Every structure is written in C-alpha cells, then in structure tokens.
Image (cartoon, rainbow over all chains, first blue to last red; front, side, top):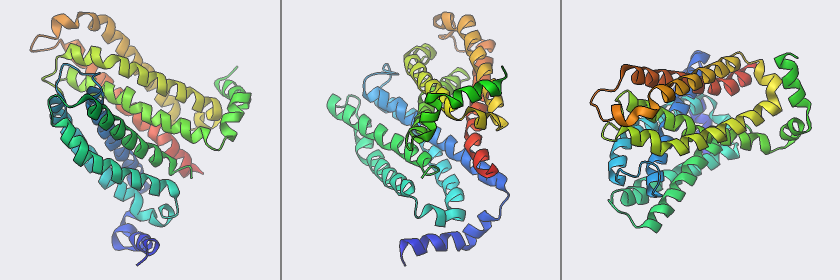
Length: 157
Length: 167
C-alpha cells in the first residue's frame, strides 16, 4: 500500500469517519489541547535547556530539573498525540500532499530520537561537559521549536 | 478616529502592505509569535504554578521569580513585537473575529495583575518566600495569572481557527 493510499484509508476508516462526524466543537477542542501540549513540552524543555547553557534556574542541578519537568513532557506528549490524531485522521487526504506536514513529521522524529538518547544521557549527569551540554541544548531547542514552526506552517502551505 | 479606521490606516501603510504581500514574512512572523509563547506565557505559567504550590516546590520562589525574569521579558518582547506586526498587516480582518478584543482585554487584566503582584509582593519575596505558607494575595495573583494567560492562549489559538472556519 502506498503512503497516499494509507492516508486515504485513515480518513475513510471507521475512526476517521467517526471523528469527522463529531461536532465542530471537538475540532476546536483538539486544537486547544494541541497548543496546551505544545506549551507543556516546549516550556519544560526550555527550562532544562536554559540550565544546560548555565542560565535560568542555575541553583538547581540538571537532573533535579529533569525530574521536575518530566511529568510536563509526558502529559504534553499525551495531549499532542491524542489531539494530533483527532486533527489528522478526519482530514488525512489534505495533510498528505502538504510539505510542511512532512517537515513537521521529520523534525518530530528527530526531536524524539534526540530526546530519548543524547538529551536523556546528557541531562542524567550532575555536571555534564559544557560543550556537550550546550550542543545538546541547541539541537534540542532547534528541533522542538522547528516542530512547532513547521506545525504552524501547515495552515499556510 | 475609530479603532477600525486606525487599523485600516496601518493595513494600508507601506509596511502593512509589504508584510501581507510577502509570501514568507506573515507565516514566519506568526510562527515566531507562537514560539515566543513558550518563553513568555510558558515560563509565566510555571512561575504561577510555583506560587500556588503545584510545581517546582523544592526550588525557592525567589529563584523562580528572579532567574526566569529576563527570559520571560525577552519572550514578551518577541510576542509583543510579532503580535504588533500581525495586527499591522491584518488588523481590520483580525478585529472582526470576536475573540480578538477579548484576548486584548485578558492581556490587559493579566498585565495589571502582574504589576499589582510586583508592587505588593515582588519586592518582599525574600521575606515571605522562605515561609512555609505564602501570603494569600500572592497565591491569588498566581491563580489569576494562571487563568488569564490560559484564556489568552485559548483566544489566540481560536483566532486562526475561527478565521479558517468562517471562510
């Protein structure tokens, strides 16, 4: 099955059709949960990444901040995944040809890979190597902010 | 001059026209406006959650207030400048969307709340911040800020949503 056919089947599957038939209020709610999830993740990541640069809440160790912000990231990812499905499924055919959608998918995949590998490793250390910490912070911020930017661009392309 | 006439003046100006007609400028400015939110509103919400005792309870409140402040202010500068440019380009159209004036009103409310907090509690944080229980007024300011900024974001997100569904 081609990707295009897969997207078509998502929109015309039982779940896609059921979501598409819901009251438009659900569409608005999905958008609101999507931005709530976005704010939770970006703010949590920002707090930790600022600390990796040696600024922001600098009296706290990096692992302490990671521990405090982890629930925000998990809730944020949950909000984004569920609301994202509500937004994508009923209109999958529209998203398929949109280059900003694919840019977002690529950036999101990279952001998640970095999040669960390099970022996790670097932020587990009480005193990470400064260069490595700054590089990780730049990479993480660029990718997550890129996801948000590409996401907003979907509506313009 | 009415508000709509003023917005029309901005819209018809050289800058307004250039922003609107550029293929990339408007989406880029809107993207930056959104990203600035994580710095401004995002960090403010975390500060509010600390004030009401729901987040970062092990971090001294004065650290949260003082060490995050430059980033919050930088975030507000970004959202304010990009927001002004968006209004400059599309003011008359955005003004027609009923949630926009509500958003402005909520921003004013949140701003007044922040000023009140700063004068009443901000300067004495080193005294009350070390006590196990924060003053009631400081907590009320935290909740007010939490609710009003959340409402600002909701109204803000509804602007392009309502615009898209109206057309």
